[in-house]
Length: 325
Image (cartoon, rainbow, N blue to C red; front, side, top):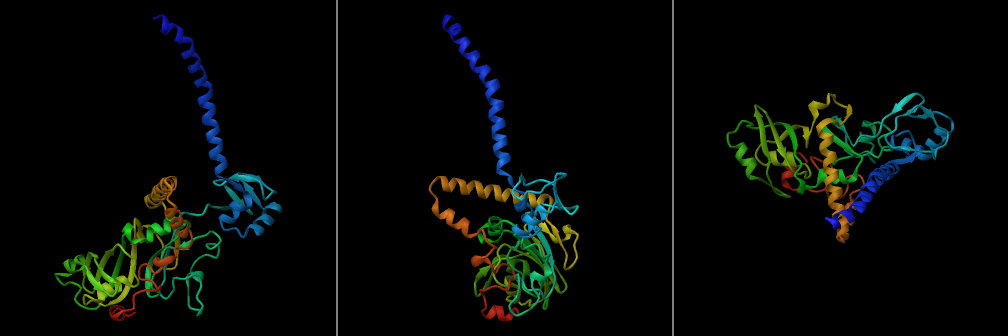
């Protein structure tokens, strides 16, 4: 008991120190976290599509920008990235992680077309490029429906990569017997194409129309699958990509909307998991992982750029010709 009594003052000292030091440590951690989300107001403006950094510098200097109700005149003033920012009295919202476009027919899935054909450059707001939003894969010019835009290259790569099996759902108007009894089994077993054999899930079938789901985005894949089972596609419309459903967005042809709710929570979780794995790989000397990640930080490019019923490269065999390619 004497030994315990001798230690008691030391224990009491430790308890007293913890009462002071733990809140202090938490406060310092909170401040560090706050600093990590701070940026010059001109950069935050540019990230929200207000213009180039130089243009945003000028906007701030002229007193046209307010942050959380305070007019700022120094472009280098650091502010929280989540601040409420107004330009000439109009609020500039943070760039969404994902935007959705209801792509019209005849629009090519490129940000500008050297032949002068209608492209996404004309179909989307002019500030999307400054907001670093890029299309997640492509849709064929004749295909309508849901086309996602992302501001995060890592998320784009996840959505496009075949190993992640992100579901894409289409409604196709077809020639041929769409009500054939063996169609579900034939599609599930896999259909041979010039790129390999790929399965699809038959979601719904009706006279002259089928609804199918695929988990990979090869060039004109849905058109070729259906053409190769005797159902050439007349019209094709994408209605879902992962958890994002076109019908939930409340938009018409040519309109766009931010992706919100459970779908964007899912995307946030994808990023958290991916960055956690990347940190683990780097901690273990995973140089290859680092190179892979950095290569995906651009606009959804690489070998998966011809995703969906895309205009991109790949394909082109007999089945593509049968599908109208």
